[in-house]
Length: 211
Ligand code: TYD
Image (cartoon, rainbow, N blue to C red; front, side, top):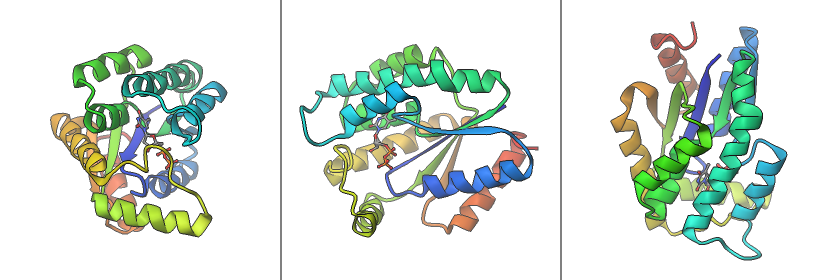
């Protein structure tokens, strides 16, 4: 079993890359579970709604971080750890690195506090690989707006933050990847979905994650 996490700014193509990997796992008859943060359990999805809705009271930065961590603790205990124990792969759309990037980088909460809360929420569970789909803030905004117009979705509370916020988020993701190269893969999200998938497959094979 392997635990693979996908990170990046909104609109970076995480869903398509995850779908491509899932097809490959199906082809190889490897069992997997697809999940996301915040969310992935009933309670965590309720917490997700509290965090991301734009109507109703907005949490302060520290409360926001604690809500992401509460959602994560439930998700790890109820889904991620049991699935891994059962031998399945877990593919997760965002995980601890998002808290470091958004709440640490974006909201400027002390990084050591974010790390401590991440460790508490996960019980020390770490991804075998974190795939970062790196995208400029400008391109992320363009893609989000295009998606909003296409399906009538409006931006959530985090997405509607200023470009300066998203720039800090992007830089934090890149910094985390540089600090832990053997557990991260940085892909240029401007590449086509096909190229991105081939790059992912190659690294999964080189690092003996998918053999
Ligand atoms: P995501 O599901 O990627 O958004 P969407 O469904 O719009 O693609 O993530 C929801 C938002 O939550 C996203 O803007 C990033 C943010 N987030 C944090 O700020 N901290 C966290 O720890 C996580 C997991 C997500």
